[in-house]
Image (cartoon, rainbow, N blue to C red):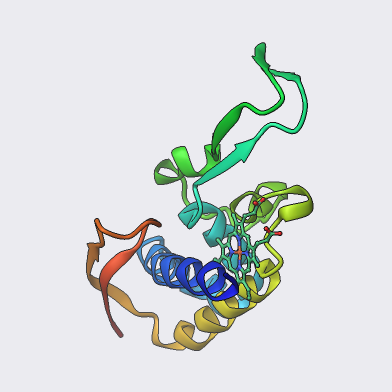
Length: 151
Ligand code: HEM
């Protein structure tokens, strides 16, 4: 369970975040502040854009009545609109969204951010460009099948 939660998400997230950094021309920020950029890129690339949930109690959300036991699919807004964004470089509360909230929030979030920050820091001096990306239509998470970079 831990391997699935950790590996699938990381493999989905990191290549897309690096490609986004390259296309947005953010290598200078990757050099100077990779932690902030990593948090923001994980928000934009949203490796887990849909979260299944069962309502624990009756509630009303934005005028919609929800009953205890209702099955819900939460679609993160940051994911739905992320293609319109560029990294702000200013991580805020929304950077927690791709890792969920509450008692089952991802315990690997700090590790995932640190891994991406380290990858960005290592690539920054090379300032790679994206040669080609190929989406993987069979992946459960938004992922690339190939992601080719060139210095
Ligand atoms: C970019 C990488 C990652 C993303 C986007 C991600 C995202 C998520 C999300 C959305 C959840 C569900 C949270 C919820 O239900 O509220 C989750 C749960 C979980 N993640 Fe991650 N994760 C990532 C990396 C990792 C890593 C590196 C580890 C471990 C080393 C990990 C371990 C787990 C575990 C064990 C859970 C289940 C927590 C529970 O149900 O109490 N994840 N993750």
